[in-house]
Image 1: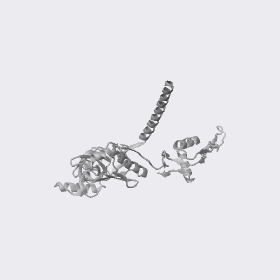
Image 2: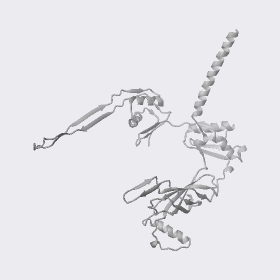
Image 3: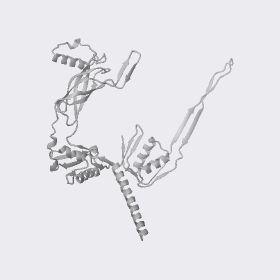
Image 4: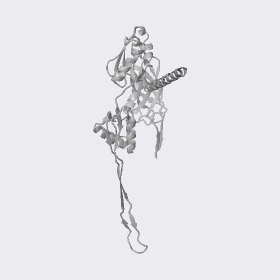
Length: 377
């Protein structure tokens, strides 16, 4: 009797261990495929703003704009006049100045006094911006308002040198960066903490993913505050306890993990011969045969040289070798509902190259057997 109880206890422990291992495997697999909400959504109204400005880079070692870039000379004259110096544009001939376009990205919640990087790009015929200094340049947004002012030394990360017989160049010396060169002068008022509702936008719209995100938020907050409006938009009502702590609410939501779902797709780049397939790609029952036909033609002319003092002529006799080789691969049957692994193994059995794979997938799609979107980029 005692022995039977011990056996029963061992059997229960065995099955409990198996169940626990099975649960852990499923949990680990789900977690491995999950993504944080902060990585798949963006918050409406919290975004970057593009800034642009026109300026001058001075101090170049003869690598600036030439005489053909008249707008550079006019910009210099205008700048000098603002400083109380009057000059004749027709008498200016310098090559140490270059006209540039300055671009920057104003991050969300940037405050007055903070600094951001700027990108400086030549718009004239300057050869290099190496060693130059960007003069004070106002940076405007799309509404025409000035939000930052850029100034400072330009770092090109490249060089160019040469002479009359040749030249050498590394990277692009006509584009440079001013590290922390822009000073934010105006803030973007967002009224972030005054919101009673948040709108989340999925980076990749999908109905299943949107539903899972809303369900995860509701289960974590224990309240039905999140609702999927469509495949790419979610509405989250701010609970009363977070009215004055919207940052805390977002901190709780952003770290939640959700298992994403996407459309089955095969992406083909014919220029590089690249084929990328998602894990949800399925193929109906189909037979594939792919044979390569190669024809090689070689010209091996035979030269007949006469003996010395024989008054003969050199004769060239054409000799053409033609070889034809055709692949002998047999039909390969791919069963219905084959997974991505089955598809890869079957195509590898045919010995196809990436270029051949593109033609095969196009043929499978034309036959109506590819249960996925085929996108050519």
